[in-house]
Image 1 (cartoon, rainbow, N blue to C red):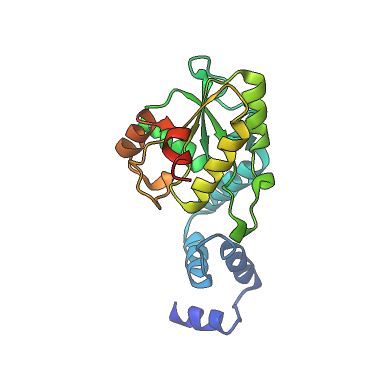
Image 2 (cartoon, rainbow, N blue to C red):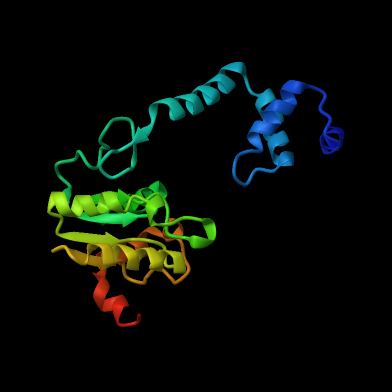
Length: 217
């Protein structure tokens, strides 16, 4: 193993197939070349059936999974299971940064409305502006679907607060209640890492956005 790592560091591999596999694994976030090599060597120890199942799962994920045309959540049809569920409160929409937040909130069992996935948050440092997010589609939902409440459930960071305020201003001309989850989630915390009890209570204890933010600003 040590010899393989030394060879890898010198940019020489005993097999071009090994090198190609390491290059692909190392493209994954948080995976360096040494970790990529470990994963590739582990794959070689697995049965051919296991490796084929792994590869097919990734291929099918890319080919068959799409995004809900209503809320932009991941799904396998035009509309996701949440949006198509008649038991959900269709007049209450929870705005989140990405799919991981949908999963986190669903795990609490405390929210029975629908979602709207922005696909990120406003971050000038990262070159992400309002036009890069699904904000206009949210405005259209409020305008066309008669929503009664929009819950802003973004991370308690500067970027999250900036996005909250931008959305609040965009929706200020509509007859819709805009609320924000309670600060049971600590300032600076990411929603996806909050425990289920804290996150569930934050959803239930939400407050109107104007009451909690506009005075401070």
